[in-house]
Image (cartoon, rainbow, N blue to C red; front, side):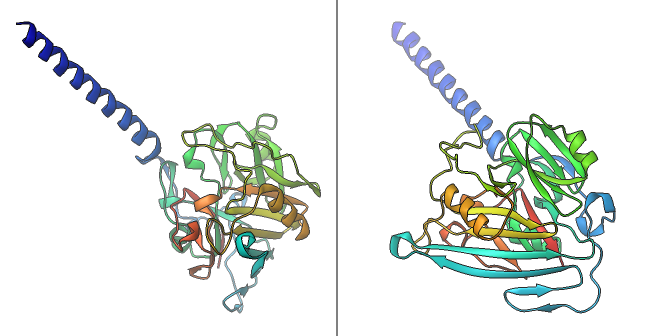
Length: 311
């Protein structure tokens, strides 16, 4: 009888352990893997609301080659650059962009859906939206806080960190999400916000206090101030932007520290610059191809959003 009771207790314990593990596993999958669509978004190519940052249709001739593109709306020039050697080699890509005739920077969600754990490769989202140029965004879907305004629509209003705002007048600024309301941003003419950071250059001054910078408190978060692949955006003057993607984690490039990244934007002439999602997400797309080396393996990682320029 005692032996039977002991076996019963063991069996119950085993069942409880597996039930607990199953619950934990499901919760982790639900938080980080299972798609949760909160809203379907109309394809940006069919949207024609000027206040949401839509771009006028291109007209006239287009001139382009593998690294340059010019239309009536925009001029894009991309350079692949390297510095250092051996274990200190860094490979990065700089896109100099001038917007013309009321054109503006656009954004798009993976699978045209807003929510968590919804991902697609940068190149796939870009192709779906007829982009000539694109980079990955802030991976908003990995976290449940931060301010998310895209193409003039407010999707999330959970202030948490230093954000980036793009305005309809062709300028950009970093701001404290907890001090400036989303309503005031929209009234000011903000078309897109990103919640990652930190700001790299502000009012022409290079930031230099990057010790122990953390963006998230999610599972697996770590500081991001060491050498890593990077993606960032800077403004040289209104409607004149510079986008930079740095490769890393490979023999061809060790990546950049935040200090190096900030100083690079300053050297490029940026008066404002902001750090976006990096690491395996860092991707630059141009005219149908990925120009950099994502993850150091020529393999893209799915992201929740992109920043792009339509043809």
